[in-house]
Length: 152
Image 1 (cartoon, rainbow, N blue to C red):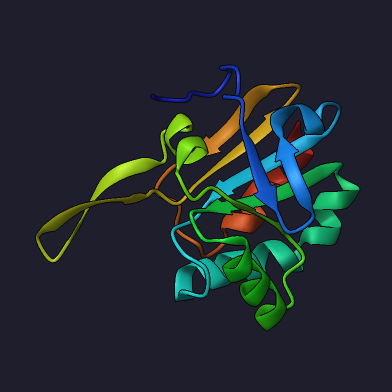
Image 2: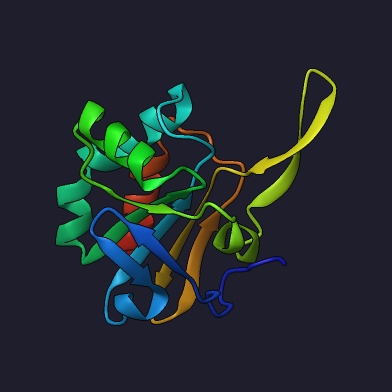
């Protein structure tokens, strides 16, 4: 499935360390939903830390940041505690939400093909995808997302 800007955001429901969340929980707010491959890996750690550094700015702009991977809640707890993360992390072990957002893709590393999570971010307001990024490069990404949120 391919999600595009201006399209209805796919429904989701998943567990976080703070309890279950679903798309409807964010009515009246801006949701920054980002998908990342794995807790405590270099790129994913840098991305979570960048969103954490700007968490106050996102809150001022009325946005909630939710990072999603297939990692367990226990892994999320360890990751959050290790780096003092202030972003909410969702666990999607079966990958249902990841697939709904088109972020479960074929990848290639050293000529080997495999399925994995495409680092991608969706800005959702009123149930509609307002902005999206695919194949995200971590450097400067959180700042670009914040600018897009402020521009809404």
